Amino acid sequence: MRAAMAAAEVGDDVFGDDPTLNALEANVAELLGKEAALFVSSGTQSNLCALMAHCQRGDEYIVGDHAHSFWYEAGGAAVLGSIQPQTVRMLDDGSLDLDHVTAVVKPNDAHFARTRLLCLENTHDGKVQTVERMQESCDLARTHGLDVHLDGARLWNAAVALGVKPADLAAPFDSVSVCLSKGLGAPIGSVLVGGADLIREAHKWRKMLGGAMRQVGLIAAAGQHAIDHHINRLADDHVNAATLGEQLGAIDGVTIDSVATNMIFASLDVDDDAAFMAAMEARGVIVRVFGGGETRLVTHLDVSSADVATIVEAFSAELG
Image (cartoon, rainbow, N blue to C red; front, side):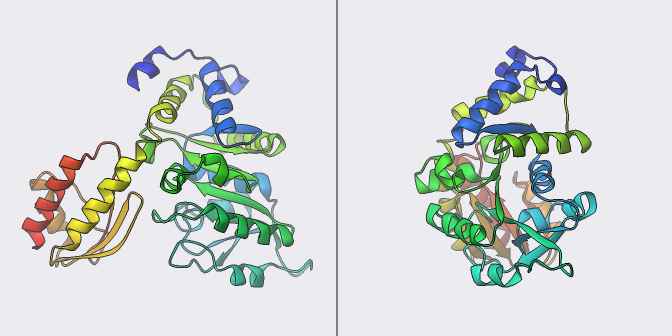
């Protein structure tokens, strides 16, 4: 990947003439079956550009109450886009309660924000939404005249887990955001795909948000390398996560809450989170505990099957 970055041909993307980035955008658009694509610095920026391209001031988007685009993106849609979030219940499998979605769509009345968009997420906490479930949600949105956006930061994981093409998962959506870092291992970047008009509008918002970059081909080359070489190997991460979850679950001081694709959520029997993290680091394992012993473990291309054994040994020594 670093060799690809060093050899990348570059131009000025502000003027649309960085050939490496242009090729990446065209490639991702084709891979996801959409007309156009826009490279952005992060998934948060990608989702925000999409929301602002779909909605105007005073509009509303429907989103899961624990979805990343609502919970973890600093309220950007409301603060920068004047777009009201309307949350609905997320079910245990990461999907939305569609009856609740129907109930919160606003009537065409001056008293209400205008409901414009439904936002979905795949995967959510590593949990995969099937092609059929995504289609069902999008069909419901269409009956209410809504556009549909997918936060597909980990869509690659979902596609590998289901054994389908990424375009199959992206097909029913007006826009889709995918991440090039996380599981794919690029150092930076996400890509927003959709219709040409929508991407043109998102491009304007990217500029306003400070996301326009110059010789961005250097990092586009890393993203292209990740797409070419790191999608199919996500299956290895899923296997490692399943093994890690099973073996950690056998330790008395660990309660496994869920294991899905490359994510493990667990509750740890620890009295002092900071002391536990320090003790684990002394054993060569860096782990984050988020309060009350809650933790999330995510496998990726830098975690091998041998590392899984090391991690389990450290947890067992501290908690077993």
